[in-house]
Length: 256
Image 1 (cartoon, helix red, strand yellow):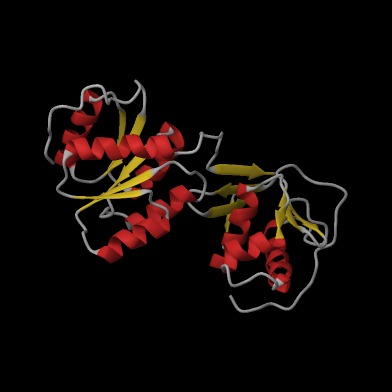
Image 2 (cartoon, rainbow, N blue to C red):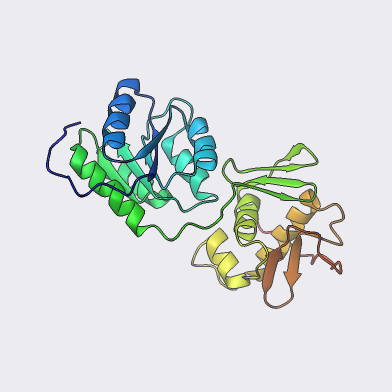
């Protein structure tokens, strides 16, 4: 890490919050000193699990993330963060291969800086990431709906305190619905988000997987209170029990 003078007047507004995620104690200490000297409010996390907790508790305006963490791959951390928030993520990594950069950006990172780096450039990239970010909304990583507790950051679902195991496809569908809770989600959008842009007419997939989710998550799958169907239009997730109840549509299960 190299520091250069001459960036006076480019400091962020006082209180801009950055979360530094890295298990290199010396590097984290140096980063924290430099960032605080330039007006940043710094929180640090040495592991992926600690990072996910810190994003929820500290609510940073940007995350500076190393990919080589001791407890989980950095790409999993990005996925966990992206499960519930659009906070900017700037990857800071010694990995310089093109595939690593592509994988991180595809997973949801906003920028990628390789080590060693110039501090002024890193500061500029952090400021740019914050500027580009959409206005922050009141996002919560954990959604409670009756007996259900849905942790979007850790990709876990609990019903009456017991964890419910979902397939990757079931989770992907539930995540889209929960992130848009209270709003109708169009069938075509759901197919694109869960199965990809090549899917637009396979509505039987939606009938099958919503039925599977209801069996696992609803108290009475035949009268769902949270995962609701709008016939011919789409689906909606309601936090508060909905009424009147509706029947769950049957359908043949495609392979997941």
